[in-house]
Amino acid sequence: MMKRILSLSLCLLMILTAFAGCAKEKDENDKGAYITMYLTDAVYNFDPAAAYGNESALRIVSLMFDNLFVLNEDGKVKKSLAKEVEIDKVENKMIITLNNTAWSDGTPVSANDVVYSWKRILDSTASFEAAALLYDIENAREAKEGEKSIDDVRVYAPNDKQVEIYFNKGVDYDRFLLNLTSVALAPLREDIVNQTVNAYDWAKSPSIFLASGPFKLKEISYGDTPGLILERNMYYYRNILEDDIDESVTPFRLIVDYSKSAEEIMQSYENGSIFFVGDIPLSVRNAWKDTATVTDALSTHTYVLNQNAVIRFYNEEEFAKLSANKSVYNEELVEETDGNKIFADAKVRQALSMAIDREAIANAVVFAKAATALVPNGVFETNSPKELFRQIGGDILASGKQMDDARDLLAEAEITPSDYMFAISVAAYDEIHVKIAEMVQQAWNELGFHVALNAIEVVDNEDIDKTTEDVITGIKDDVFAEEYSAGHFEVAAIDYTAFSADAFSVLAPFAKSYTGNAYTSTDAMGRVLSQGIPTHISGYDSTEYNELIQEAYEESDAALRSEVLHEAEDLLMSDLPVIPIVFNQNAVLVNENLSKYSFTYYGTPVFAKLKLKDYQNYIPADQK
Image (tube, rainbow, N blue to C red):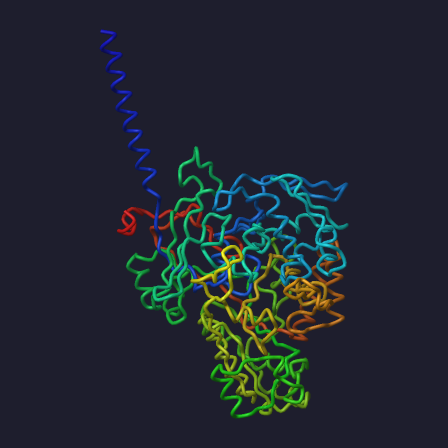
């Protein structure tokens, strides 16, 4: 009898083992959900430190890079890559211990990646506006200014899992941690960044690009069937020998089809074949404005005026070229005798601002508010969302146009608008930016200037991969972004996005020593060509403003610091080196079958645990 029971028990054990094996095999074959969505417009550069001129880039980049800290929906700083934070107030230092996670090639994310990323931004030969976020680190500012070596910056990796940071005196530790929620400071791999000749090409090609976040860049196409595929980073916070494939990232792929028209996108959303719309097309926004979930973005659509540009005298033939995008701003070809640097006159900048009907533009864009200052809605007054900077600072600029006052200012400046012609440079691929540019163009033409629209298209990449010495194919170069970074524009349209929820991050880059621009220019051999403290890319240089930002940087009392920053913004909005147009808003549509999603305080999506009900029904036929 005992033998029979033992035999039955063994049979049952074998059956259960077989079933378990089948279940395991099924789980391994079931990769997870394929979720179609329209996340953003097309993006051409995924470098996290360069994602702050366009809202679309920031949304996607945030899915592919892990930050040391994140700012959750409630505006609280939470650990992400950081596991522990130790603060030694005696030595004025911080030690951040990292969690165990890995890049999308399986290489562990290390403290050296953090150190490299920060020093890349602080390098005196590089231009990154986020640099001031790190100026609390000892010798960081001096290294950026070329007064000390980048090796003198006191941030170290004593081992693979710890970042050791020494600070200048009087540092606000909480504010520094708030700065570290900026994706601009996400860790990067030195070997990947340095693989390409062009400083940004590594961040464009799936064959080179590596991600530390929940999703990697699987595929991107700009051809006949343009689209983007983000795929699970299988090494993201996962032990691949022990954990299930979806332990840390639930969906397998996020699929974006760029070939659909606005009507097709919305029809696909209505019939349930697109489950998330993160960027509602302009032509259908009015129809969906009461359905969408709308929140303020920490971003202001802004016009940058180049004070160094010679604004040419009007010439009918040349203006025709300018209007046909056949003539663009080129500093070397424009002589002083061809025109005047009228944007260097504050009265001209003020007049251009007054001519804009911000309320009308916000209504046309639908998901926006008239920008009555530069610092956007949502930015903190001090270190928390209990009080907001914009609420305390109030409205500084008028939301409606003041055309008569604008004409009076131009008369005071002895400027006859009809004597001059210039172009607004805008990224052709961003329909919202183009729409705004058309409305601003109309306002400035009404003021009397001859204004053209230079809608700049992307082009095929021609740079090479250092490793293979071949041209990197299948990627595009964002000419607008490159021309803007080089200062080759008269007026440029950008999304000026807060690097952190601290107002200092918005205002500081307009002050000398805080611009983040390169202090040293070098040739191809690395030899120094010139050196000096750069101004903001607009050419703005105000001694009074520089002193206010320096005072804010040195002020340890949070309330007094905020007072100084409000004073700085008031001055900036009087001088108007840049013209705020609208405060951007995030508007999303989410299918009822989609769950487990959230957003950061910055409005970027959090999709690691995203779930789609009955996802097996939506797996593409060729993937089953």
